[in-house]
Amino acid sequence: MYIPKDFKITDESLAYEIMKEHSFATLFSQHDGMPCATHLPLIVKEKYLYGHFARPNPQWKDIEDQTVLAVFHGPHCYISPSWYETNKAVPTWNYVTVHAYGEVELLEDEKELMDSFHDMVMKYEAPESPYRLQDAGAEYLAGMSKGVQGFKIKISKLEGKAKLSQNHSLQRQERVINQLDHIPHTDEQRISALMKANLKKKDYPSSSF
Figure 1 (tube, rainbow, N blue to C red):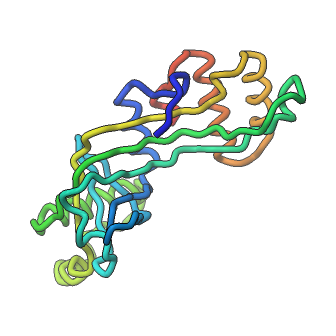
Figure 2 (cartoon, rainbow, N blue to C red):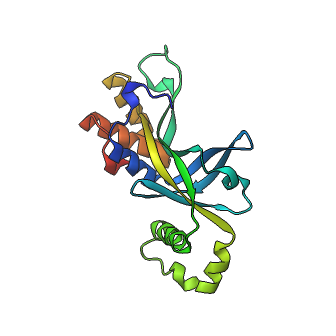
């Protein structure tokens, strides 16, 4: 990933925080000599990413023994040059993203697969939800597991980028924040919050992602 120095996330713990917060990722690999991608949730557990393919998805069949790339998309939004103090400018896009590289190991152990299912349910179900995976019953879960192929990725490299107008003047950044604050959309509000935190601390606080 192309990362100008102003936008580089150098703290690995922040990259992990972004992956946990924005865990619906795009997983890229080579399949039959062509780029292939699947959109799927990935659970971060220590230095591994856990997920599963639908078994009919051919991407998993030759995914071992190659380096794969998982892309995690954080908040992003359009930045209009009309918000600046001059018309001599062009539009841009502010965003946060993390790229994780590693090698895939297909899960053959039934317990490890079921543990990954459990972790995923616990992450996404609301705390007050009455749903528990085990309530579906062992027979039903055993049948369901036959329709998927679990995997884990041992992370070998992380790249993090937070493009938040850091390459512009303080005055211009404040103008952008003011405009974003008036747009009632989630991504615009989150980018504004990140920009405010960056101006205040000159860093990317994990609590803001």
